[in-house]
Each structure stands twice: as C-alpha cells, then as structure tokens.
Amino acid sequence: MFEKDKWKTKFLIVALGQAISLLGSHGVQFALIWWLAEQTSSPLLLGLSGLAAYLPMTLFSPLAGVVADRFNRKFICIFSDMAMGVIALIYAIFLFLFELPVWTVFIMLCVRGIGSTFQQPAIQSIIPQLVPTQQLVKTNGWMQLMNAGSFLLGPVIGASLYAAFPMSVVLMSDVIGATLASIALAVVKIPKQQKLQNMKQNLLVEFKEGIWVFRKDRELFYLVIAEALCMFFYAPLSSFYPLMTSDYFNLSAMYGSVVELSFAVGMIISSLLFSSVLKVNRKIRISYIGLLAMGVISATCGMLPAVFWGWILFAILCVGLGAFGNVHTIPLTAYIQETVETEKMGRAFSVLTLISSVTMPVGLLLSSPIAEKVGIHIWFFIAGIAIVSITAAIWLWYGFNSQKGGLKYDSKI
Image (tube, rainbow, N blue to C red; front, top):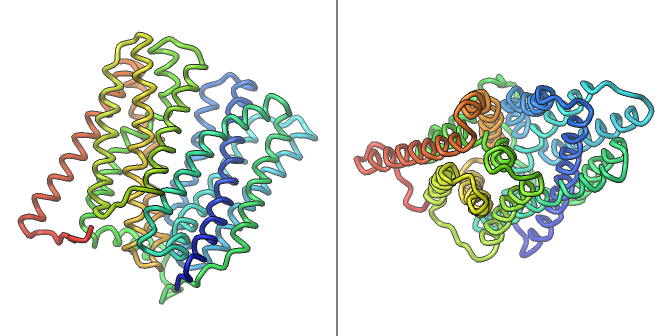
C-alpha cells in the first residue's frame, strides 16, 4: 500500500498545504479580534463572536464524521477549505465596497466554523491512508509542529497586515492559504477508502457507531471520558491567559504576548521531539501522563505570587502547558489512527471535535463567574486540582478493573 519513501513526499505536500492554510486562518482570526475590539469595545460582542465560531462545531460534528466516512475525504477537505476561502473573499469585497455593520462578521465566522468542522475529521482520517502505521506518531508530531508554528506566526502576520492594510485586504491571506492548501491536496493521490456497507443507514445510527468505536475499546473509552471531563476545566484557561498577565500580575500587553509565545514554544519543542527522537509504544499511558502534567502545571500557576518573578515562572510554566498538551494529544491521535477501522475513523474524530466544541463554551459559563468572584489565579488552581483528580481517578479505576479481569487490556499499547 505504501510505496517506499513516496508516502513521505505525499505527506509533506499535504502537511505544508494545511500549515499554510492554518497560518492564514490564525492571522485573520487575530486581525478580526482586534477589528471587532476597535469597532465595538464590547466584551459581549467578542464573546458572541466566539460563540458564532464554536456553535457550528457542536451542531455539525456528528454529521461531519458521518460525511467523512461516507464520501471522498479529499473532496471534503478541498471543498471545505475553498468554501472558507470564498466566504472570506466575498466578505472582503463587500467590506471594501460598503460600510458593513459589525454583526455581519458573525455570519463569516459561522460559515468558517462549519467548514472547519467538516474539514478536521476528514484530514485527520486521510493521514493514516497516506502514512505507514509505525510512522503515525512521528507524522502527527510534524502536523502538530506545523500547527504550533502557525499558532506562533499567525498573530504576528495578522498584526502586521492589520497595521499596514484595511481589513478587506487582510482577509485575502485566508483566501490565499485556502487555495494553496486545496492545490496541495489536489495533486496528491490518496488511496481509496473503504465505503460504508449500508449507505442508506440512518445518520444518527452511524454517529452512534462512531461512539461505539470508543465503547468497544475500553482503555480508549476511559481516556476519552477523562479528557472530556478535564476539558471543562482546562479549555477556559486559554481565554484567561491575558487576564492573568493584565489583572493578576498587573503587566502590559507586551508581557501577555510573551505568555502566548511561551505556550507556542512548548508546543514546538514537544512536536519536534515526537517527530524525531521519541518512540512511543504505550500511547494511552503517555496520553494520561500528558493530562496529569497539564493539571499539575495549571495548579502550580494558580499558586504563584502576584509579583514580577511570579510572572516569569508563569511564562515558563506556560511552556510546559503547551508541551504537555501535545504529550496528551499526539499519542491519542496516533492510537485512534492505528486502531480504528478506516471506514469509521471520521466519526471517531468527530466525537473528539464535539467534545472540544462543547467544553469551551460550557466551561466558560462555569468558570467565568467563579473566576470573576475569587480571581483568575484561583480558577487556574481549581482547574489544575480537578484535572489531576479526574485523570488519576479514572486511570486508577481502569487499572483496578483490568487487573481484576473485568476489562480486556492490550499489552501492545
């Protein structure tokens, strides 16, 4: 199936295309946040913009996984990328010609959210069609490395373009990124995927089959449950990084940007290690360790004193948060790509997308009033303790049951 070394060229073309697309998307997203802030000065509208981006993921993730398994994944990725590029182009033209009301940006964000929802499980399911099983950890490391690079450079590019050009011109970087990603994917020949046996099957039934993928692999099931519960506490922290710097440590936006940079550096370091020297056999165990470390670091951040050297430690700890986020995610992704049948893989990844899309807004609804009342740093501590407790309890519970013989344990993991 995999011609010697040719899979590397194919993977590199696809990965670079996706990285360029992400670079444009991160840049535009950063510029849009600043544009909305300058136009409205309204935290409520900024919050609604986040809801417009995340709500489509919650609504369409079940359908997106089924579509990725039913139809040509390459076509889905290209169509989704180009749809997001076209909506950005149309909005840029209208923004150039007319004075559009600010609320119109929500429509663009919503369409982009729908496109991203369908694109993610499809591209994640394409990778194991291109890459030998024993290379999945390394290739996922490279994908995360490029994602981290886009996360790091995107805001820099977005800020530079926004400072030099009107918003209508900045949006064109998203169009260019989507076009290049689509061309890169179009030139690569993807091996045919196995079709679903019953194309007339009910969509809800098919999505339930995606959930059953996790139910029948008990070790994976317990890990995904742990991740889902932990993300309710962890996901809101990404929105609280700026407030930790500005409100708790009482420092300027420049110091806040250093914290964001630290997180991206951690992602890059761990991605480089996974893509080069690290060899992971027990992927589920390593993924649990990543979750535990994220909890320990989050709790430590919440105990730092509100002084300058405390902020220095906070920036260093954010390197660890970025790194151990990958320690959790990369082995988990590789394990799913290795073990799940190719005709069900899209639905499996759509379940993970659904988890992330639900936990962010619900987590913010839970954490925001608590953090406002007791302080941002206290929420970091609460979140860290909760993550450690949940992860340790579920990991130990699974280990206890597997030793009793109640659950099947795969010694190869």
